[in-house]
Length: 119
Length: 142
Ligand SMILES: Nc1ncnc2c1ncn2[C@@H]1O[C@H](COP(=O)(O)OP(=O)(O)OP(=O)(O)O)[C@@H](O)[C@H]1O
Ligand SMILES: [Mg+2]
Image 1 (tube, chains in turn yellow, red):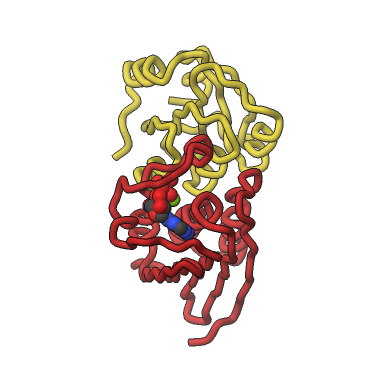
Image 2: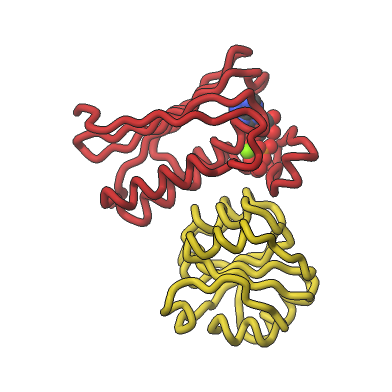
């Protein structure tokens, strides 16, 4: 799925857009967690195709994505990142979306759309 | 084999606001000097977990980055205590003594040390009440 499609099905708002070509990118996998060291341990392949879904709305979510070379984070449960986090997203070239859906609902919707677990 | 580059970074105790900054800087340096994305990523993940541990479990310390002429990347994360009483237990996936504050940051899964060990090509850990030292080496994998 493309960022735009993901934003649409999750009723999500885009807070920072990464690079010009980010809108052409295809994502195929999702990892959902509020614990960053689970993401750091589990996401081992194809980070450029992987979306991080998290309820953690702080700088560490962005740092984690940066270390893993992830390019798209979706923050669930309607949390609003502050300006510092939005700026970090821009600096790191990471797109940040925020959705009002719960983690469970967001996972369900993305699964229905064909997104799969990390391999 | 000799060290051709060395930089020492300070990590401050309880500096939650800047947690991960040193790891970001190290990752950027590695990419700038042309280390492959795969190796830079392994180093970044390991050093980030080590940096967070120094902030949430220890009294701060230093992280030293060394690069040798044969391409080996070495990271030494040395903190000022209080040490790890049982290293074997600490290395068990899921074991954690993380505080509420650490959990709020998104840490405390008990996955950090096992993940550092997996990402590094060589891993050694020494600990006493005076401090814990992680010595990590990374190289391109064929
Ligand atoms: N530098 C350190 N100084 C003192 N204790 C440490 C240090 N690093 C780790 N520990 C101890 O070892 C335990 C396991 O560390 P590990 O990094 O694997 O997990 P964690 O930090 O608790 O959670 P996670 O890393 O998954 O967020 C910690 O909970 C802590 O008790
Ligand atoms: Mg840890």
